[in-house]
Image 1 (cartoon, rainbow, N blue to C red):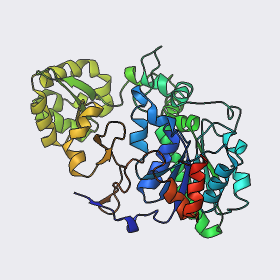
Image 2: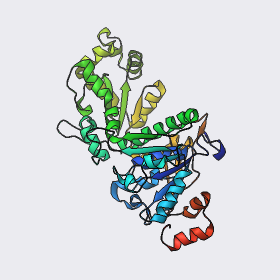
Image 3: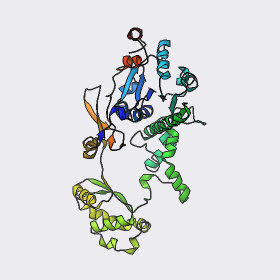
Image 4: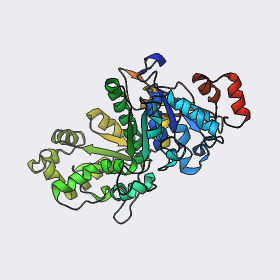
Length: 398
């Protein structure tokens, strides 16, 4: 099992981040930095981040993307609240924001204003679009999945469908974190910060770039992945005799020989007309019914055991709830237990999917309560206990 990384050896230890974010894109960028050791102070309104109270498919946003952060509830509409925020930003290395275009400017927190007092500040704006004709539009993950072609590639013909996760919010946040890390490295050389940006629409375009390249190479119109012509002959979900399903992929000529030998398909394995992948793809209609019958005679455990033994790519068809008890994730430190403020329970949620010299990144700070670290954050920037108490009485902090 990988070791947890001690606090003082984390890569971003000593980096202070002020996070003005909500929903998924901004918090996911902050999460990457927080897990890597940065001190991330999340600025919330006095009533707390509205994301905390989302229901339905949004109920998991706050628990998933806000561990290892501090919470400061602050009235940014008041002069005293703005002064607190500016003092905090002046002592920060990074600012992250993902509010609508112009919102930070109205508060006096534009990059142009803030760099005057903190030229080392790296200011990360996470938006719907980068500069261009669409830059002032309001965007959501689903909006850009639709206009960026991802929903087209995910659904059936004529029935576009968003991916089953906030993949663009998360990817956009990750690209934002990458830009921040690059700017931190550049600051080592120049001593200066900069504004960096990431966006939903351009992230979507990057995600579907492989399909754009496919059309450019093939000259053929794109088909959704649900009805695509696969690059491989065996790359499908197969039913087993106990009513379960298993995905199996055979993606090389060598794997084809192993597959045929393992599943008593010697006639296919010895057929020179099936020796090469492209020849097999052209004969899918002939070979797949035979393969389905052969694999369908096995139970799910039998099929998976044989595939495991042969080293061929395979996967059981799982739901996200199955991952709570996944033996690999639990054994490898892939799940991090956090407390759920609303119901007092706990949940094991995925950590960053990276390994640092055999070490995994874990939990240093549980999900913060609303304003849990307001006093601590103000003390860290030089506010006295008396001044903090006054700000609390005046409703500036919570």
